[in-house]
Length: 209
Image (cartoon, rainbow, N blue to C red; front, side):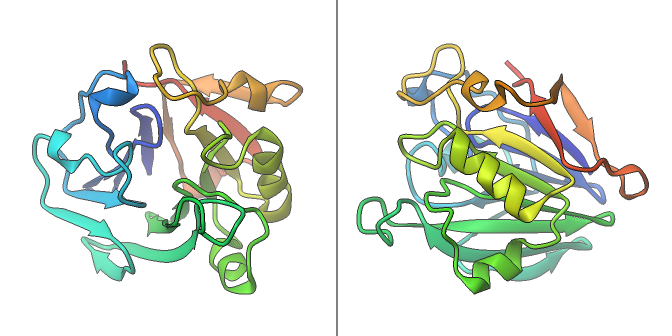
C-alpha cells in the first residue's frame, strides 16, 4: 500500500493496482488543486473541503455514506461518527472509512470530532494498521485528542492530517502542535508493507505541492 498526501484530508492510496483518493477539496481553502486521475473517491462528509469531486480530473466511482463492498480486491467499509463533541448537534456526522488491501488495513477518520467513541466504533477501529487522523483542532479533534486516540488504539502507523499548511484559509493548528515532544519522521510518500510494519510510529507526509 502506497500513501501520498495532497494536503488537508486528501490522500492518494494505491493498493492492488487501484488508486483511491480521499476527501478532495476546492481552491477556497488556499491550497493548489492538482489531484490525479483515480479509480475511486471516498467522501467522509459533504462539506466543501472534503467533497469537491468536481476537482478530480477523472474517476470511476464515488463512495460516501454507509459502505461495505469490495472493489478490485480492496475492501471498503464505513461507520458513522460525530463531527463534534455534542452528538453531531453542531456540525453533524462524518463517515470513517476503512480500506483494506495488500494485507494492510487503513482508516481515514475524516473530520473526527469526539474521542469518546461507542463500542461499535471501538470495534471498527481496533487492530487497524494505519490511522489517518485530524490534528488541527477547531473543527476536529486537536493534538491532545489525536495522541489519546493513538494511545488507545495503537496503530502501527499514525499519519496526521487536517492541519494548517502554508496558504491555508482555515484557522486550524499547524502540525508542529501535534508533533512537538513526539518522536516522528517526515517523508514525501510512504510504502506500507505487511512484513515490515513498525510499532507505533508517527509519520508526517509532505504534501504534493
